[in-house]
Image 1 (cartoon, rainbow, N blue to C red):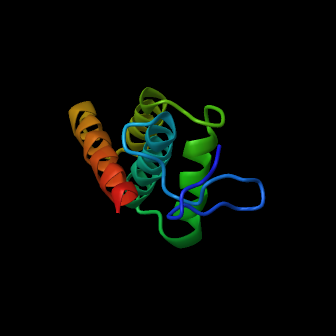
Image 2 (cartoon, helix red, strand yellow; image 1 turned 135 degrees about the horizontal axis):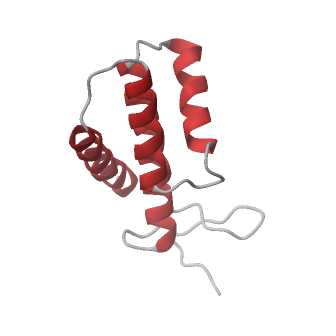
Length: 110
């Protein structure tokens, strides 16, 4: 498939353009960003900083395979917060997940 003048490609022929909003690739990238933001939010609530927070985020994102679902991440973060005696309601975690997904989508659009 020929590329337009406004598109560029790397050596594999893949486009360097961001994925189109609403496409499977766009949603995959948005979900991955949401998962990372959820993990970093949970780390902050648990008092983790720096490399420890980064390691926690990596562990959360990788906990359930290459691309954990929103439910996997919510369960993991909620469980870890509860185990750390952090007072948090499931509704708050779900609200954060929705907010972070909206932020991730906006970031990908720009």
